[in-house]
Image 1 (cartoon, one colour):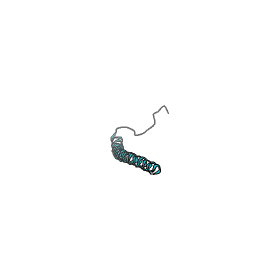
Image 2 (cartoon, helix red, strand yellow):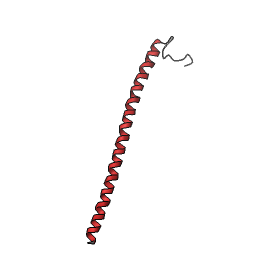
Image 3 (tube, helix red, strand yellow):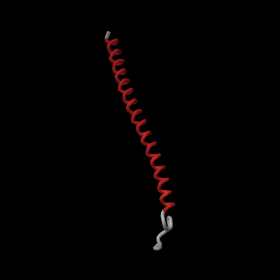
Image 4 (cartoon, one colour):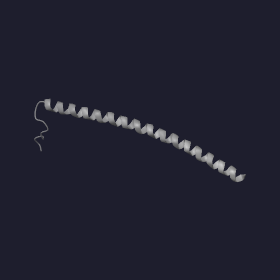
Length: 71
């Protein structure tokens, strides 16, 4: 009977570990999903800012990207 109790306790311990691991995996999955959404948003913002900067540079008066005379 002792072997049966020990086996039952081991199974219970494994089931608890599995439950905690499932919860951890789900939490990590949600975190990664949120991070990818943020990365996508930031990538779009960077592309928009790059376009705006290029447009501003093309409409700016004076020489564009010219080295100063002291160089």
